Length: 142
Image 1 (cartoon, helix red, strand yellow):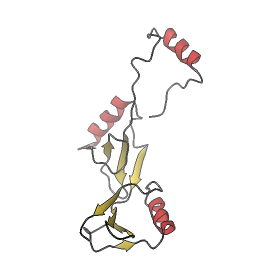
Image 2 (cartoon, one colour):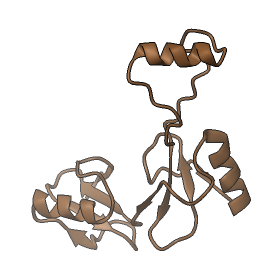
Image 3 (tube, one colour):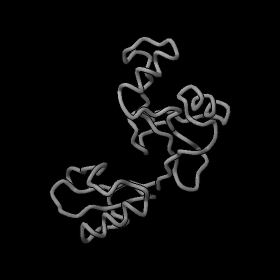
């Protein structure tokens, strides 16, 4: 979530804690690592504890529960800061070189086969995914 107060150095941090009667240490600091995310074109919003969009940790049953969760974690109580991703997944046969993308079906067959790393990275960028080699399912026996 956006910070309410940002400190330039440890002196500012300690002065702030002293001014507000807090212990002069690192106690009572809330660290939030997760993220809100949803699929493009769908209303459901998820919370991913690990901070990776696409990890289905919590699906909110209604807007009230979603907004309450945001409030508890210090996020704005609105629909901002939601990472949107495409449905689908990357996969690769264990013994073959190409990476594939399937959005509507299980694997195989491949719906999309990437012929180069440039084509693959462009696809990831277009689908809101990090431009790296993460989250590729390895299929054995193909």
